Length: 398
Ligand SMILES: Cc1ncc(COP(=O)(O)O)c(C=O)c1O
Image (cartoon, rainbow, N blue to C red; front, side):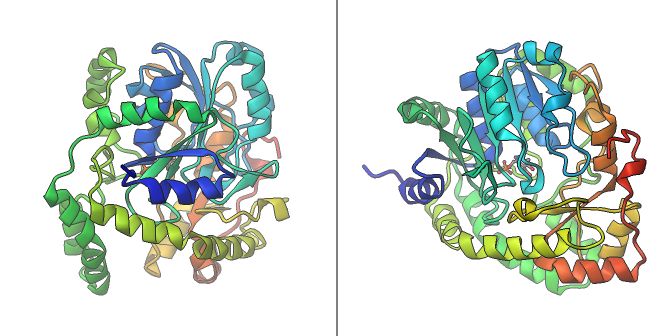
């Protein structure tokens, strides 16, 4: 029987030069599968502290201890040279983030992983069109994961991709065992969602509209970071590895993260993936304009004009900039502040050996949709937003 996922997987395989691709209902679910396959519970995983908290909880659910990496304050990528040898030696895997589409230094991380005999797992959720070292992000690791909720905006689905195609059957079986059956009501809610959103966008009744969005579980965070609920989390940890005890943290913003998809969901996702090249071209053009502005990353080069999912402009007063954009009805998402080590503390993670650069980046980064580059630049300039001066950042590195 031809798998219901075959067309989606074939399209993604073509993008990644023939790499084996397995459809998963969400990137977070694919990451859990990868961590469970490659990492013995109790191991330590190097990851970026400027990351979605959902990913932090996936690492905990896999029975692993997060180890927060030092970052480059210009783009939030992992600063490989600043990781002490004692930290490398204690790791059982490296997990990249490729924050907003800016690649982590995969060739260097690959070399470290080879030297240590540990797996590299790439989270390419934000980086579906990005390249590093002349290759697509997501082609360096034993495994990589992609989200179809980002550039493709399907709001469902993703891929687990594998360096070794012989592992396909085993990981497909692991996936199928963890999937929950999809219910007709979930499929209907998914299919109705764009129409509900369009209707809500047309109304100026902001508060009732937001309440309706929450009711439909389209959005559930009150703040940037979800509440950690440390006592509950401490009680859940001994049950790892398992998804169920961590469900309330991992499902945030996507309750269907482990549901078997219905045919309508797959058809819509396939249509959206087919249009990806056009979307990437628009992201690349907007990225180039934003990076060339006074708010762009200092020293950004042609190599950094990737089709970023969001462009992290660097502004002095990020919260004022968010408010200025909101006045133009431009909402800002994907802000990851504070870094995960400040958010969760030593009880739940190893702290970064050099946290200042990550804290500075997290405080000043304003993630902007590159397709709205001109509107955003106009609004920021009109509000008098000042570019961040990173040379004055606490790390003082640049
Ligand atoms: C860096 C990163 N990785 C993974 C994910 C999870 O993707 P999905 O929603 O497809 O599970 C997100 C979600 O925003 C993310 O920001």
